[in-house]
Image 1 (cartoon, rainbow, N blue to C red):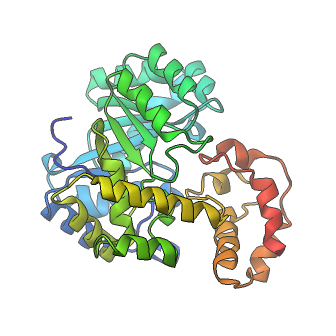
Image 2: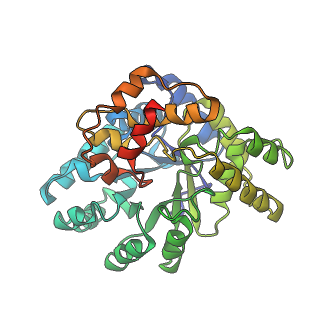
Image 3: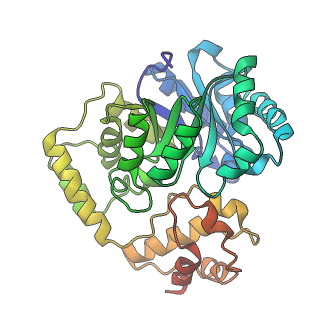
Length: 356
């Protein structure tokens, strides 16, 4: 863990795109800027961007820089193994896709009550320990989306866990579904460092309305994103804050924020409390566009795009695209999406808002 240089991590889930393909040329420029600024932590998963993220890691990072220039995290996702014997071949596939011999961190992905038993039944934690002994993994961790009580159970049952990845941002700190602060305190009690995901809540805290933007402008010329990143990074037990940057300008803004990291002042914390009040009155759907729901939908519904269109209508009165509205009616109401949603959204009910 000592190889991690600074608190900003490059989350490779929302990379720049050219149509359906990742814009490798721009991704390379982002990687170059990131490393040149002294940052070195990268995060991916096999399912990200339609199973293209790991390949982008190889093309933009690992084939262009020596192994000691970066720290790389990957994840074991529950939909890629059915039994214990599937796990090591899956890990080997991921290593090959990324073009490396080992992962610095390997996380049991999106742990929660909906999938934890599957990991236990397939002895995933035991396999991870064997892979660590073989040198394919340096550190074992989890990413987590559930209650603090359930996190307590997992960390108690698995002392081999060395790091915990949690969703932490100022809008979710006391949200009854996410319970960011309560989960953080559980990890802290166990003496485990924390990686932060969704610090700007899928862009929600980057593209803020005029009241919030004006509030922050009274304090500095920095972007709204910078306040969100600094909020997450100000926790003493936070080792890393991931940002899913999708263009070079976002990379440059985040580098400027985190190169010489300064924790939030008391005045800035009070401003963030006011910002939370404004944001919660907007009544937007709190979707982070992770697309976990879309991956399991039997009719491949573009749920995040529909929710983005609904939010746009609420903010600007722009009607929802009729094609997206029609797609919403294809919902079979099976509930598979809701079992995967890290935000615990009532997706089936929210889709009915598409017709406005």
